[in-house]
Length: 63
Image 1 (cartoon, one colour):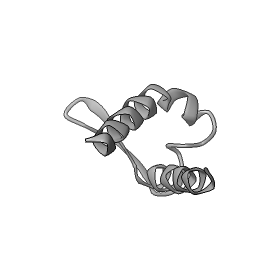
Image 2 (cartoon, one colour):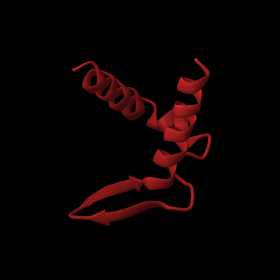
Image 3 (cartoon, one colour):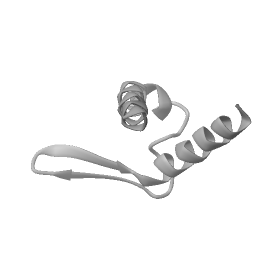
Image 4 (tube, helix red, strand yellow):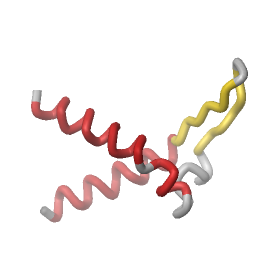
């Protein structure tokens, strides 16, 4: 249950910080896809997600 709480909090935090992170290049890396379908812009930030996961794992390991 605790792990799910951490995941939900991380998702809420990341969705709130998306605009701020885009200033630093996250969401525009090679491997991040943006496309328009059904009259809406869709984003699949695969490379940014992997990079942020590695940073989070490094911080968790250091703590």
